[in-house]
Amino acid sequence: MNSTARDDIEQKKMALEDVLRRCQSTVIGFSGGVDSSYLAKAALDALGAERVLAVTGRSPSYPTVQYEMAVTVARTIGLAHVEIETHELDDPDYAANTASRCYYCKTELYERLVALARERGFAVVLDGSNADDLDDYRPGLRAARELGVRSPLQEVGLTKMEIRSLSRSAGLPTWEIPASPCLASRISYGLPVTPERLRQIEEAETRLNALHSWRDLRVRHHGELGRLEVSTEDIGVLADPVVRERATVAFREAGFTRACLDLSGYRRGALNEPFEPGSAAP
Image (cartoon, rainbow, N blue to C red):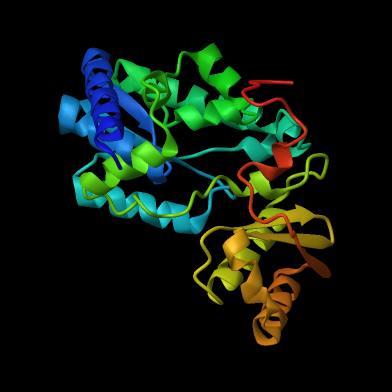
């Protein structure tokens, strides 16, 4: 990283500190991923432990490995951390899995966070959306706007790469972990979200991750078919017949009858490709 890039990141970091100080106190939607973990650490540094509460929403769509990381990060940095149960699967609009699914999920979560912040006397609810999210289809942004949830990382222009760099400097264990969005984001639009399909995805990804240290991996659910995306650098790993057979077994044991490899490789938000980048809703 050259000096100009370092200076740019440092300016954004200072801007973030200013935004957080002006929040006075905050509830943070905390998944334990790269972004929300750095946001929580920055808020702790700016406001102090008594003015920051991290809240993790638990539901079948939230990956277990992500929850374990959230607990680890909170314990490591001294972050007050609570869990709440969310029930987006009970919402027919969410379960129908239209292109607006994320809107209904985020509405459920943010309504709970706003109510909790009001009850406990915290001034602002924040989430970890970053500047790169504006280049993807994000109907959840609409829910945030409607409920007054702020995204400081996005406000100051921090990208995922910059957040990873800052996280590494801060000693956070999340700085190099792969992104891990909700399991429902792997289900093809129009195919209803069910606990069983979420289980299939999580089990298949867990089994596949045990075979190799993939740079990125997603299992996309298309009914009986499971579509595997790995980074283009890792596609060659599956040329090994032993690995390929074990991957096939992983899909079968997770409940898929067929499996295929996406030769285009892993793409962030692959199921959103038909939609306009930066859209908040259809």
